[in-house]
Length: 258
Ligand code: PGA
Image 1: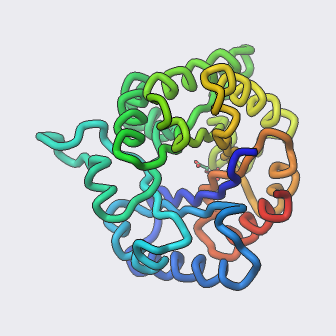
Image 2: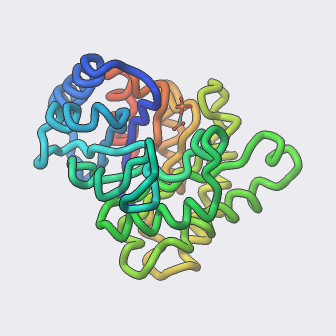
């Protein structure tokens, strides 16, 4: 069984003080119930400027909660104004990096070749990559969901070398479900997770151990059903990760289903 995980993607939200307060509340809340990170890993992804204080708030290098970055640039250094490298992220204690989120693809022009290079750099630096794939509503409606998702997954896998696969996490995030309140039904999500698991297993004998998370309007009210759907190994949570209470309920939901 792949590891189960819940990752909160805070996107462009919160001030420094709010981010630290939320991180502390999450870490404290996790201590309030029987949470075992080996059963369900938990990560939080604040904006770049808050990685250091948030990392401290969750316990520094020994933290049981993973510090996650929302993106990174594939180049290690150089004249890339505004960019942040995986080496820089590693140097402040980041353990995982989200790569190819649909908002990065749509708003910032990140394409499949860049996703390949970034996955390669993140895994090569010894960090874990949370690689996002997902179709738009137009692509789904025209019957192209499978082709689009597996095409994006192939670009991700092109960046994976050998045992680095053990540090890969895939997130299926249908673009039409992100921030819209329109969650994919367990049947819709389960079908796509099946395609992804199948492709991972044919890519490598260890591919069956790669966790595949669902993301897109995950809430405390729908996590039980999603987490008990075969092939869904956890959640990448946007809006509902901005309040400790709802995020903790989602973690509990995944714990119960595991
Ligand atoms: P959402 O975002 O939970 O707000 O839909 C999910 C994501 O973009 O990771």
